[in-house]
Amino acid sequence: GKTLAFALPIVERVRPQDPAPTALVLVPTRELAQQVADDFAEIAKASGLRVGVAYGGVSMQQQARGNAKAHVLIATPGRLQDLAERGSVRLDRVRILVLDEADRMLDMGFVDAVRDIAKATPANRQTLLFSATLEGKVLEIARQLLKNPARIQLADNKEQHASITQQV
Image 1 (cartoon, helix red, strand yellow):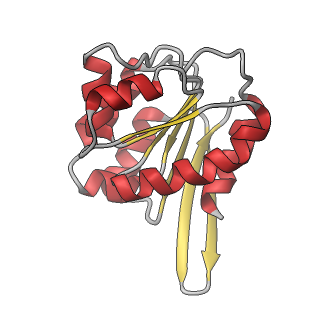
Image 2 (cartoon, one colour):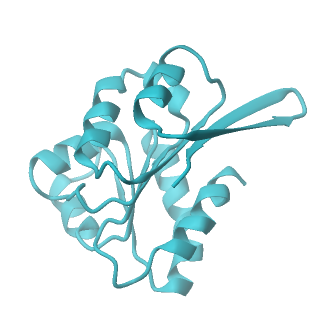
């Protein structure tokens, strides 16, 4: 359900003729990266959009070739940094940046990588941040990366989930 909350609007906004990648989704783990990519692929193919995925444990060359033309790229921060540093992925075309499970990503030590990746994307991008909590490092990164944010908080039984999206 949460993936569709950002996947559907992205698929509606991105066009097949847009530069690649137009949308970037950062996730903390390769398992989540593959899950999000699978969910995205199902709805993106009807619009003619290509979805790529990049995470550790797989050949960098294989991922670089597969992601060169992806409109939507789902990646873990470490692998994305490696691909960007090698020139295999361009971040200057990203119009939409999603930080999924930001609390977990930052707890895993990706604070600097997330900041560096965000700096490499255009300043006028739309940024969406999804997190189970909104305190500490997550609140700090939200304040640094988001402009005119709107906070949306959902309660699902016993769990609360927070997300912040940048108004554009």
